[in-house]
Amino acid sequence: MATDIQELLEDSVLVQCRVNGAHVEEEIHPATSLLDFLREQLRLTGTHMGCMTGHCGACTVMIDGQITKSCITLAASVQRKKITTVEGLRNEDDSLHPVQQAFCEESGFQCGYCSPGMLLSTLELLRENPNPSDAEIRKALSGNLCRCTGYQSIVRAVRVASKLYSVDKDSVS
Ligand code: FES
Image (tube, rainbow, N blue to C red; front, top):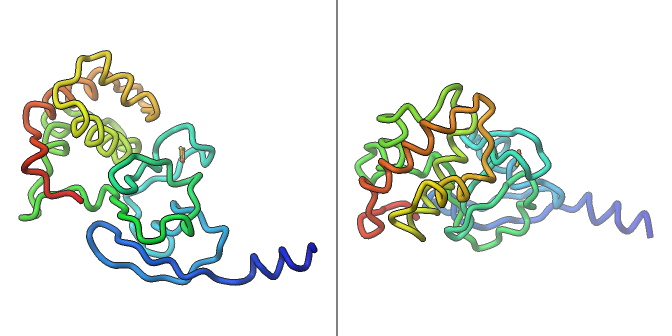
C-alpha cells in the first residue's frame, strides 16, 4: 500500500489551464501547490509566498474569478480553469489597471509584499460590490495581512479604486 502511494506520487500529472489569458500545459508532480507551480514552473513571481498555511493572503490569485490562496491549492486541481495572477492585472494597452492606479495614487503599499494579494481581493470586491463601505472594504481584505500595517492607505486606495473601476470596461479575465 505504501509503495502504491509512493508510486502514485512519483507519477506526474498534466495540467492544462489558462493563466492570465494564455493556454498553459505543463507536467507537474501531483503534490505541487498552485503557488509553486506559478512561481517555480511558470516564473510568475508576482504571487508571493508568506505563511504557507492559508492565513496571510500573500499568495492570493483568482481561479475562475474567485480569489483563492494558492499555497493551499493543488495545481492539479485547476484543470481547464482560468487563473489570474497580479501579472494579468493590466489593461489591454498595458497601462495600469484602475485598481493598480488607485493603489499608486493613494500609496496603498509600503514594502509591497502584500500588494499582489490586496489588488486581487480588491478586484473581486469591486466586481461584486462596486460601491463598498469602509466596513465592507475591511471585511473583504480581512484575508490579506499587511505586515507594515498600512491599512489606512489601503482602505483609501480601495475607495478611490471604486470610483475608477468599471466592471463593463474590465479586460482582466
Ligand atoms: Fe498563502 Fe500565506 S502564503 S496565505
